[in-house]
Length: 595
Image (cartoon, rainbow, N blue to C red; front, side, top):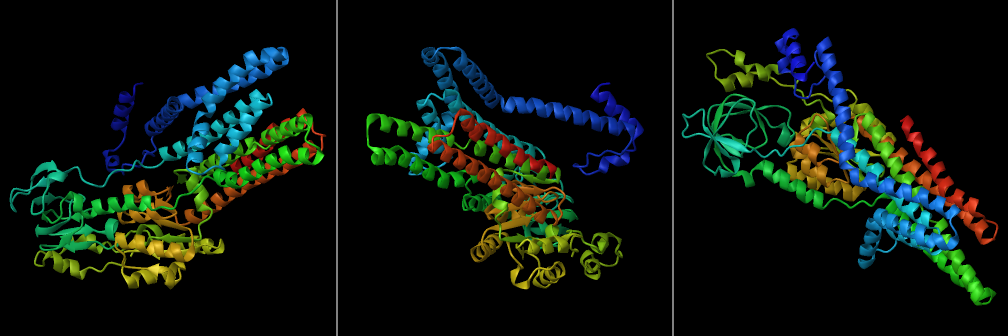
């Protein structure tokens, strides 16, 4: 049955009431046809993902296959050909594969050296692999670069899969507006938003987002300002009232006069703030890069000592110098971090995968790395700590008012209680405190309400900053970071986007605005406060396992190196120090699969 036929049959059997379901509700109505469609879509989606993966990573996969084949062929040839023939067959093969796999590593190392950044993982791999070529371990040199490429691909895949699950972000700036010819023109004509000028009249209908900063000239409307101000209670706007772009018209058709063109409107200013905040975001090194900055100079210094000190002490004959230089080069090869360059990225790959199964989506391994070090978690109020839902629907029921009273008189009679904290808000914040992380609230809401909610969920009043506009939120965040250390910010509105981009780690609620999801490093798809400590716990466990891998690798390598320096090491011990340690570290990392 074709997809068109299945959809037609579904339309025949299912009530039309399903047509009003939310755009993101893909669960269907539960009927057999919906279930069949869902299963069809799942299989089609998986097939599409596989094809997309092969297409996107075709270049990397080809390189990995070539590298693996060259290593296998080279090992076979080394055991079957005469030593002289190896240099004419194995060496050229390995050089080609080495350059194919390690070109980026060599170029990156060269560029870093030019900028004074010598000791990183690229330099260590370059030195160790060149050393392997010097002592005739040609396949070993290729294997190091192969492992590195596999590790890099692990992280790329995990990030790609995480991104695929995040709602596609959109630019909140409008493409078009409806220009009214006069205050009596309720239809208007569409023009590009950037062509609208201050003083132009625009028509805004119920459900529309306010496209440009404007003031009401005719009609009355009920405005949801929470995407911009964070204030959950809708506002009544009548003639003369100023309205920010980005707010949503809940009820009433109005004609507005543009006060600011597109480039100067609130939404544009917020998006510009996002770019500026992202530029000022603290830079984060990869875990392996930070480790290499310590490990590499130590290894290079020890190799230099091994090459120079014994000949000077024992007598510098040509034979002695040759022996200890060869020993130093072997030392560099054994110290090559094969286990680390594959197990550490694997840890972050599995960590991101474990998080995605819990509805926590990381956009990069760096976000997972940074999250484990946060000292304070700052949160928006409306839609983040609270539900963002007004409990008393009276405001939405003004249409039932007496014909003898005006819209604003009916509005004034209605009382609106909000919005309440989410069910897991207090427990989630308590768990953060238990983990040693401070909790703060940055909100555009009124002071009294902010303090009330803060007390209810357990946030200390000194960490509550109310009545903040978007640009002020970023300033408040910077102050909290300066006083307390690395900061996580969690928000859901357009007004949170600059702060999300400027924080050490920004996390958006999945039910939030697209601009917030775009700016964030992490997305909590279930929009629960409990996801915050859950994500930190997972980040910490992932980091701990990565550290364990490095400790295991270094400890075993040091033992093998010591045995080698004493003259008791053989080729099998060296293989264990490389391949064996890699396998041990991978097995240790696979514990994350249980998360």
